[in-house]
Length: 429
Image (cartoon, rainbow, N blue to C red; front, side, top):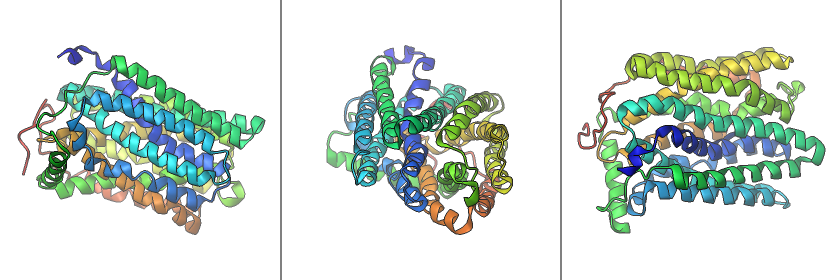
């Protein structure tokens, strides 16, 4: 196939960067934006978590994407839609009821972003062999989270600078428009550089057949051998992160009197953008080669252990509340390197152990949807819990939320070969 000749280096990094940007914009950057507009912590945490529901429900429409065009078509189309909607968010900030309008538009971005994720993962799974998937999983994770560094780091830093010069409204309008421009430029780049990921499924020719396929996708997913173990493992892997992801930036920005670190918006952007960026990329890339050399089964417990180091870092910061930005920055370096190193373990496990079967793309989407549910649910209530406990006790409680996955990583089954390129017809039942 012609698409096979396209070197993954030219599209894996950019495609997964485009995947990460809208997710992080909603999960983290919008949190700081609404905080700057003086919206309450509990309201921010609840709504910015709830609108991420499409990332959980995306398996329900993933089979319908097989009916039309190619996977590349949906990648490009959703990148354009996301870019345009970010521009609308920027203009919505001017209205009195800006929070309502912004949340509604961010919900559209969430639906577009979730659809984009299905198609992008479909391209990745279709175009790369099992060995290549392991090789490029580090690149995938690194650039997905490079979007995190840009979105919740450099551009948040820019917002902080602009807040002081032009006010909160114009600062965040600039940031939202920047997201818009980046997504639209990526769409045009991928029109040329992204492989097709395979043609549409000729077996699905109508909506009725599409819905029938959806039912079969769900049925066969829950018929997988070890499915209860899979679901428990996926939810537990990032469950603690679900609590921390919303509260961490609020903790960084909250005043010292309120138990926070008292950093400005620009300080937070600087720490994540400068201190965190190199650490995360290094951690992700090292993990990819670490897994490729040792195999995922031998590596998984160490990946999980290192992944959860970040929550110990948050607890230490909440207990001691250092006021030196270099100490805080060093802690973020440790946090991000650990996060980057451990994150790829879950993604590769879902690709190689959960997804294989007749509906590999849809079942991978199902797995990532369950993963996002494990983040969304604790995130929705993290603001209320943090308000009740205070930041210090909250992050100590988050540490206890890591215990199930540390235990689960020792016993999780590996029903499929890590080196298999395709197991489309050999579903474990």
